[in-house]
Image (cartoon, rainbow, N blue to C red; front, side):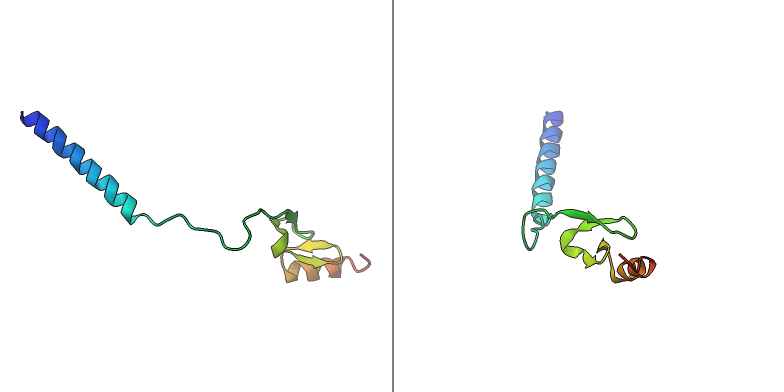
Length: 79
């Protein structure tokens, strides 16, 4: 009889902890903006991939930042 009570108590404790965990966990984050994925492009200077919406266009392609665009355009003045 004692064994049955212990098993029932352990099951009840696990059930309560599972319910508490579901209430405390934050809801999944929703993405803002468009839900469709963006095309990934590579920086012409360093090759890092980034979404097209975050890239900067330049004479030699797209870049991950203003510094890489300026460096590329300085290294390739005729492009």
